[in-house]
Image (cartoon, rainbow, N blue to C red):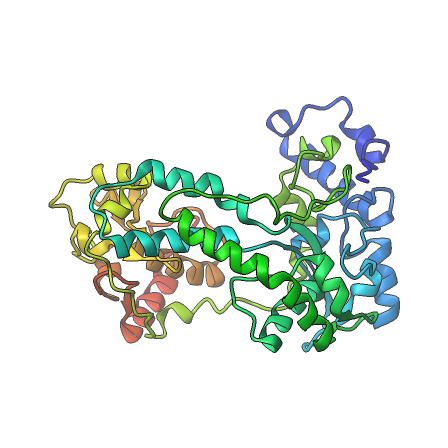
Length: 427
């Protein structure tokens, strides 16, 4: 059960006579955040976790003084949480990773049948050659996506989530299927501070038991993509009053003494996200590699306009509009996403580019990647456009219809060097 230990804590007392976020001076806000961190670190508040909590100290005593690689679900979940699949506590789940860091991770395990329904709808739409937008049909798919789930989303340790993929690969199970925690529990071999191993024969039995319902669901999903159908035998409910995802920011039962003060991003950052071990490769965007786009179907416009906000986005621009950066036409900006969905993305620029108010999503993607690399050298800054001109951005791009842009590596490196030499964010 969820316990609001923050209510009676020092942080709770501090927040009693103060207004939440909007009316709090910055210094007082930081004081409250630090007090909250202190309460979590001391164990006075146990409904959240941190890199210095009693649980973290117990973990360090086992694995030695190493850096944590701790994700947001770990920080946002109670210190006494135990995985509902393998029954291990956070201390038992912790283990040393390949980089000699302490892995402290739990993730939300969910069924992927909603994604399969969306993907199948797009396939059937193209195959039928439909040339009239199907707004109501798209709404039906959106409403029914969750109806095909074999189980509710639930928080589990990373090892239980990973073993789902491992078992499917071992057995050659279709990618669309995923095991529930009840099924996973039946075929894993559990050890403290170690990833799970799979009992292949038990996993095979679990798959054989689940296969008939999975095949039926896949058959009905194909039919639903053309019409509508459902079945009520494919759902694994959890016990009443059970909190399946006890992570700050999920569900309805939140911590009122904390949530009225700090959003989840601020809180997670303060408690543990700065402990990340791996750094993002901010220069990868300019290495010259290119992901080929998928062929755009002849009836792409009807499929695009079946989603109302996409139709509004398309209709907001004149037919002869072209991106001022890459010079591609409206039709050339259209591309096909991973699930077969037709996309048309346009970004609004800032005041520094007032003569270039809109650019295509692929140009914006290159712009944001450039900004991320500049920030890694110069520190954080808000303006996404003042450090580079439209012509400079255009000079590093090789536009390709219906796909992400290819970037010219040499030109991109020269532009980056120029920006780092001349740009001062605070001026």
